[in-house]
Length: 81
Ligand SMILES: NC(=O)c1ccc[n+]([C@@H]2O[C@H](COP(=O)([O-])OP(=O)(O)OC[C@H]3O[C@@H](n4cnc5c(N)ncnc54)[C@H](OP(=O)(O)O)[C@@H]3O)[C@@H](O)[C@H]2O)c1
View (cartoon, rainbow, N blue to C red):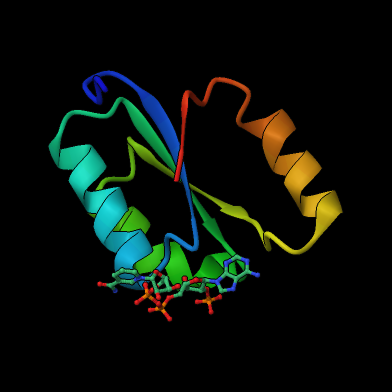
């Protein structure tokens, strides 16, 4: 899989293994990474590490309405973690 230049989304990306995936994707040359977080405030510090390439969105993967909203907002995503 070619990560360089890709657009990815990581749910639960605000901490733990999700945050590690976000940082590794950026290190590997991802063009943009959407960080899904139940509370976007919890991903602020992470976003500040690379504000140009990280966007944070509110995403609880148990909430169908939020899933649909994320799918619309992130229609350019080619990689889902
Ligand atoms: N850490 C590892 O090395 C490792 C290795 C292999 C497998 N795993 C597995 O990977 C998973 C995550 O591990 P972790 O260590 O990163 O755990 P963690 O530090 O507890 O982080 C869990 C993440 O999932 C998010 N989350 C929980 N429920 C959610 C929901 N309904 N919608 C969206 N996000 C939700 C949390 O968000 P909030 O901040 O909002 O709670 C948090 O960002 C676990 O199942 C673990 O068993 C971990």
